Image (cartoon, rainbow, N blue to C red):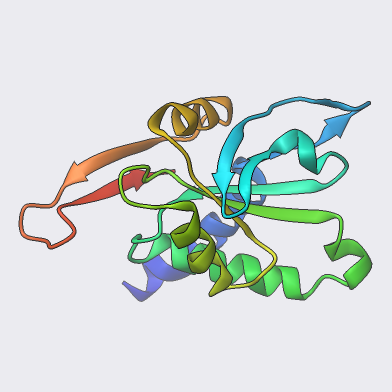
Length: 154
C-alpha cells in the first residue's frame, strides 16, 4: 500500500499540473471557456485571461485522492515567489452537482489555501466543463454508506 501511495503522488501531481491544466488565452481569445458558480456568483475562464489556470475536477467528500492532490498543489504554490503566484489561478471544480454547493466547495478548498477558487454548477454546466477538458465523472452507489454514493472522477 505504501508503494502504491508513493507511485500515486507523482501521478496526481502530473494530473493536476498537466493533464487537467488547460487554459491560457491567446490574443484575448480563450481556447476553452465555461461558466460555473462560485461563492460570489458565476465565474468564467475568460475572466482569468492572462493567468495560468490549474483546473482540477473532484468533489468535497472525496476520501483520499482530492485531499492529497490539493495538499500537493498547495505545497507547490507555496514555493512560488509572489510575482509568479499572482500569475497562477488554481480552480477546483466539484463534479458532485447533487450535493456540493458553491459555499461548500469554497469552504473545502479554503482548508488547503485561500488561493484556490471553488466552483460547481448544474448538471448541464458541469457536463459542459468536463467535456471541454476531457475529464470524467460518474456517480456510483454505496449501499452501506451514509453518503449513499461516491463519484468516480479523473
